[in-house]
Length: 247
Image (cartoon, rainbow, N blue to C red; front, side, top):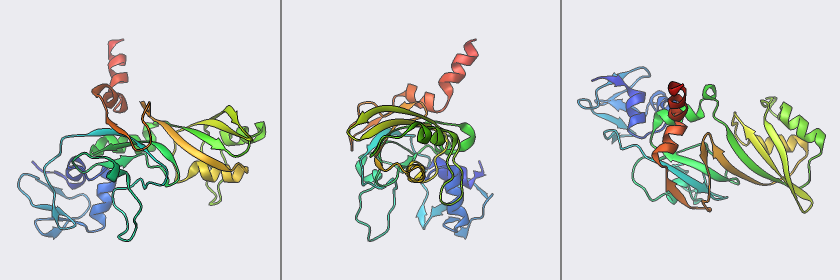
């Protein structure tokens, strides 16, 4: 049966459908030796599909792993040839084309979901689904009420983008600094660091503790675990759907 190429690639563990569309538009995908075009279809049981010259295997068994990304680890699968920094994929000793969902910058740490489920990846990263991400942020100095309120309303960053409103609350003091709790729906690159820079609040540490319904729990830096079926259902929104249907 013919299906869209991006769906076939996502099911084979090449990332979200949007990421797979990028593979196609970059000319990295071929069907029966011919460069594929966006919107093209194929039958994975009949056609020879390759990415960068490598055959695309049949759909993998779906895998879902929660990882505590330590500081100074890349939230990527591939890296530049001369880059000797460790990646999140190197920390997870599990088979398959696993990709990180909810990337963290190099200096930040905490929860990263590793999976080969392209549909779930799209659901967790697409703004229209509104999945929250929660962080604990250690600041070098204690924020005043004006800074907290500005953070909550949204801050204009250096590139002119104004961040959406977020939930920020003071948690506890630590020396001259403080821990704050941040819950946000969007996830622009280095958003917390850039926001704090505009507010004059030096960041010491960023720790992500939640993605949607998935929590970091008791994992330590570098540790990972396989999600249980209930956690997967919650990420996919199935648990809330079941509750709604019972009413």
